[in-house]
Length: 496
Image (cartoon, rainbow, N blue to C red):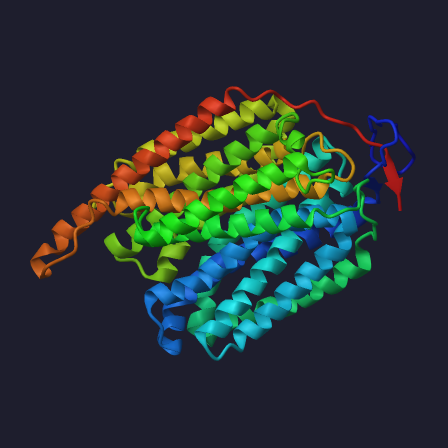
């Protein structure tokens, strides 16, 4: 249906269903998209911006390398663990309310983290940051779904949103190096405070207040407790696997417990009258396939980006800041190709062909990286890195489109929570697998004369790791070939 002054937004209404797409003028929708992007950008950039500052934090707080890793790990644990719960809670209690609360929580934790006098207080602040990021990220996707109708408009908005977040990783590496060098490590946390404060104020003022859209207002507390604790244990075990290996008790014990807890979650959901995650939802349309591909794509990203960073610093001798700057070309690809190219391609050639193209480029890029040598240098890895980046840049937005396609009123937060969880879990999975493979042939140096041999061992391990990434991506390609283009639902707007 076309209305004067409005974009064309129609809906296939189901019996008794609430309409869900807000009919707002273009300037209002752009502002809402900007606020969502600002909050999401803060969440993503915080991974890499703090990682660059770790050596300085380690020195000032006098902690070991292993201890300092939990500054990153605490954030990742709570972020992955609370995504699904946050998304569903937004469906029940209202997306705007939780979105603003998530930004405020993240901002306050950034401030307390910047003031942290000890490692423990910093880790606690980082864990709280992760909870805030989980709440704002899950509800951000849901707000986007209720603001932009399914089809071209939503595809374009999702493309811009996901590409900016992807570029945030590179931006974090660069800005983290600059801020740490100029103002010290605390500045990488304090920088979030003014941005978060403004974002929270504008969100409260301009986002449309909406009650929870889920028809069932009951929150499955037992399911929430089991899935949150299970996911935290899973990510904890995978984080340990990346440093201690899969054979370590620090990996095996929490991994086994997480498997039992998550199996219990599935059993709870299958019997619950008001499940946190209705199991039938995963069988709808492209939801399950999109989440499997998201797990595969982020598994590749988690290992490949980390290994390339280590290669540039340890083998090629780049500084942390210089290594971060070398990721500017991939970041630009994510921003421009992912932001506009992916949604344009989905609208022109369909979701399936975009996903097949994405996984093909990622597989080819990973295969080129298997040819890495001690003397390859930056320009030796650049072709593979660029191909991989082109593939991933169109893949991430397309996967989010697939994961959100066909969601019903009251399921927006659930869908965004599930795809967000798949992506957050995939990252440590890939890092653990590829890092374990890479370190198999990494011999410890026994003297100055062994340095070249040690580097050769490191690079050989990287070759095997990139081969594993190629195989993982090829599996993703086979799955993408089985994807069916989702049937889009069209929606009547709610005028506000």
